[in-house]
Amino acid sequence: MTEMKDKIDKNKLPGHIAIIMDGNGRWAKERGSHRIFGHQNGITAVKQAVEGAGELGVKYLTLYAFSKENWCRPQEEIDALLDLMVSSINSETKALIENNVRLLVIGDMDSLPPAIVDKLIDVIDRTKGNTGLTLIVALSYSARWEIARAARLIADDVRSGKIAGEDIDEEKFAHYLATADVPDPELLIRTSGEYRLSNFMLWQLAYTEMYFTPTLWPDFRKEHLHRAIVDFQKRERRFGKTSEQLNCD
Ligand code: FPP
Image 1: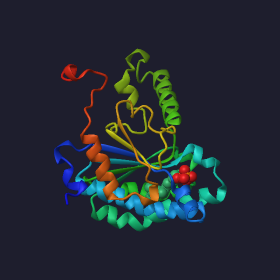
Image 2 (image 1 turned 60 degrees about the horizontal axis):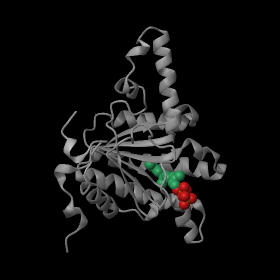
Image 3 (image 1 turned 120 degrees about the horizontal axis):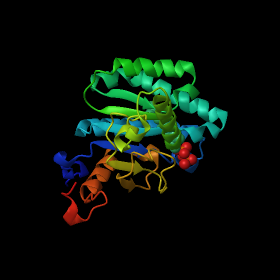
């Protein structure tokens, strides 16, 4: 039987895949367990997504791990989630280095406990020379926060004379986003059957192909990633043009 992985055209891989990991709470509830149990099992899926993307040769994988809105969850759940992320990053640092994975983090670092920021900076520094997959963890991230921050930074640079207001175009604006130097995602995956962007990469997703699956995040495995990529490769990306106009600038 042909496996989903064999159906992937290696020459047409999405360069950047972004994932909204959703459904941990429902997965736990289905098992009569606490939401935190769902997050714990979500780590298996994180490993599968990272390994799966790395094995194929995908260059960037962004995971929406914690939104700015998530700070409104019960303190116990927030603490457990942050603990889980730090302990996973700690226990996986060696594997990240061995597998040539570079870690980046996007989000409001000022809102995170300093010990967590120090840990993240340490791993980012230790993996900065890696040339395989770039794993971007969106942590205390929201797209509107990111866009408002970019506007603030631009205002500062205009005020100090570093740039002229009339020179700001889409390309320059993008340099002020948390994802400066990272290509836009070509494929967005959201699990758990929800059809929303939830304040995630609103600028960067302008022309991204969306793939929604009912699979709850803790059940997500490499095969689900392969299926999403095969689906992506069947699509014609038109970027607002007609099929006939695809070669025009
Ligand atoms: C959404 O499920 C999931 C989250 C808010 C957290 C996901 C984070 C992890 C699995 C840890 C990531 C760790 C690293 C190292 C990247 P939900 O709680 O919103 O589920 P529900 O919609 O069913 O309630």
